[in-house]
Image (cartoon, rainbow, N blue to C red):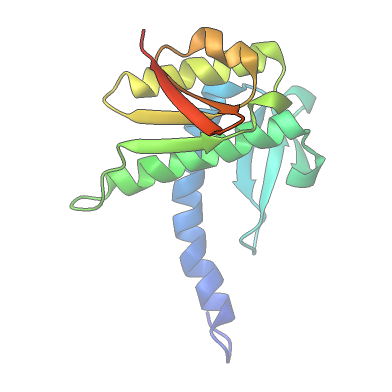
Amino acid sequence: IGSADGAKFKVIAQSYTLNLLLLHANKHLSYLSKRYKLQQVPGTLALQVIDCDMCDEIRTVYSLSGGESFMAALSLALGMADQIKSKKGSINLDMMFIDEGFGSLDDRSRAQAVNVLIEMAGSDKLIGIISHVSELKQNIGNQLIVSKNESGSTIKWKID
């Protein structure tokens, strides 16, 4: 199963972890978009996309739009948090920060992503969203608002 430099064995071993990550990520992706599933490119550690709306056509991840890429990346991040949490005696992730990305989503996808994150936050998790998208303000209850002025920046809490 090996090669002189151990590369083949590394891919085999890392593939097991990657496939566990993809199980968790695809669970989250199914809430965000029923259209796609992520899978490993056979024999590599690369990812590809199954397009369920196109008769399960296999596509490269580079063919995804900006919004679709954001959804896939968010699903992978949430899946990684699940995978870390599922290991007994390991680190518990109670906090996640998401920096931008929501501007690349259409209104429906943005609302779906925010609903998933609000559900997660309701389960004793802190999820921080850093964004300039004004539509998000309507859906997020507690906000730390940073405003720039002549003398620097100010912050204020808006608590719902």
